[in-house]
Length: 252
Image (tube, rainbow, N blue to C red; front, side):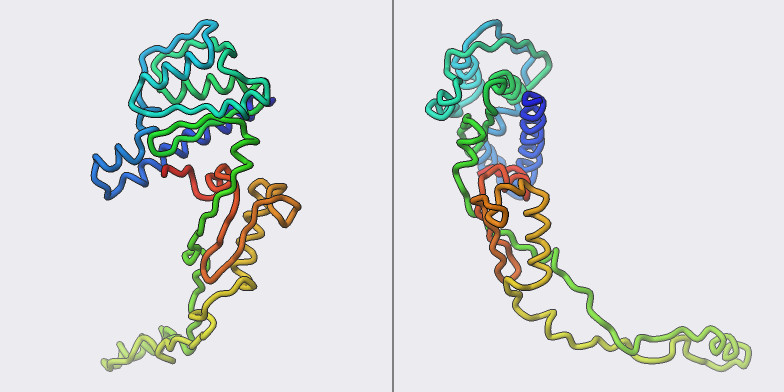
């Protein structure tokens, strides 16, 4: 079960990294994009065949380093605390694959011992345990204005009088099809006010996130992560994995 869980998480991370790369690339100069997302670009490279028979984890990492000018950093202190070291053996054979898929399969084999994850950031791929990544909290501010849009109220909206329009046509007169008010917009000072942390929309959004994404991680339920509403934003302090579940993989 642990292998299946980690595999699903790694695949989801890899898929989101591809989406994030596409979003990051839009509107940026190609050279800047390649430099900014170099690690992700290398991980997405096609590989005809990758075969390792009882080779060490360090040898697999060296192979990944040879695929492009990136840094591959294993947090050995955290990994070895869970019984995972550079001499752990890896055996796999993949065809018509990618560099990233090779790494996913390698860490999946190691995850029999403890969950192992990796993060691609800039020109560096970092590998460590899930507990190590979860220990490092990061702050992000999410503007949620588009989720808090309220439909304006209108008063005295026009009415269609079909009978009157029909009679007017028979009599040769010109009767207006619409009758009633002119569709005046009702003033609603609350729509333009600055939202505070007690705003029902922000409170509900916070509750949805806390109840659906790693509930045990939030301070509301005794964890260390936190969400603080402010104006039309949510200030979230949480491990990177939670941020990725909120907004997709980060390529920094």
